[in-house]
Image 1 (cartoon, rainbow, N blue to C red):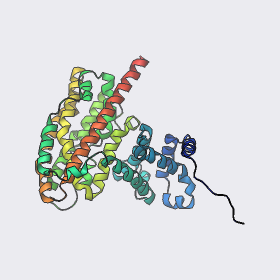
Image 2 (image 1 turned 180 degrees about the vertical axis):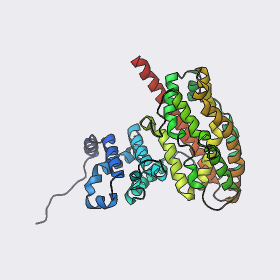
Image 3 (image 1 turned 45 degrees about the vertical axis):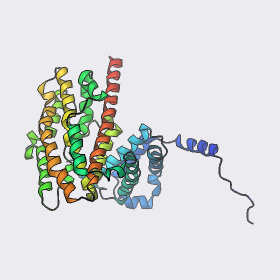
Image 4 (image 1 turned 90 degrees about the vertical axis):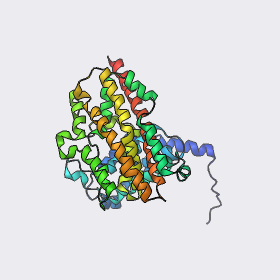
Length: 372
């Protein structure tokens, strides 16, 4: 017999109550641990086909995090952090870490690619919504790049830069090194992903940048070696990703953004614009760190990386503008605006990360004072 019951939608207040009740069980740390286990599961995709429940909690948590971070305006740190950590754990498989070969058993897993795409699709839409893309498409690209580079060579000091220069303690400096080691110990790695292909002047310039980052093939001169020396001066961990749990999500987002752009050749112009900003603006940031180290009376070994970068990145910035960005703008006139998009996005994500790093330094300094 057909039921006479009519299903009415829940009142909005009831919906919210039910939703809150469901999400009290969300545990980002537990879901991340479940995902880490999936990463190293032999025959992952076959096992998930046979036992879909293995991923149920992780996928539920993933959906909640995506909604909270990018879709409903909540944007809490916990959801952003979870998503960027998951995305990074997938992306890092594109690099070789000289570790146990079994760690790469799922590097081409369709399931992992699906998770990556699910996060990236929502995240990139959220990132792009913060930029007026239509306005960029109307620019004189070459003039826009020249003006941006001129302004970012020697910018006025932000509140974060002034804090680092004038107030940061030695404990704060060590915390800065810990977070900085996340990128500093594998520097240039993502750049290597775009160097293959047809030979031309742009490609050769990018190779020159990479070679200098890698000490022209001499490990003792590789930039990451200088960063490790700074860590070693304080008796800190010199293993790559040794301080991964300290890294704010905003810093992880910078890394993940660059993974995306270097893995997708369609985004080559965006990456080149972003790298132009990174190399042009780098010396100004490194001068802040150097000034802090000098004020604290630290040894040359504790600041050598900054001095090296100030010298080399000033040169790299000129190369990137004159020999990469401007020639690409001429070669791809219809798509050249993507160079400016990449430049502006790199600046936006970098500024956001800088604020997060100083916030983390302040918290670490406060914790040190409380424990002393």
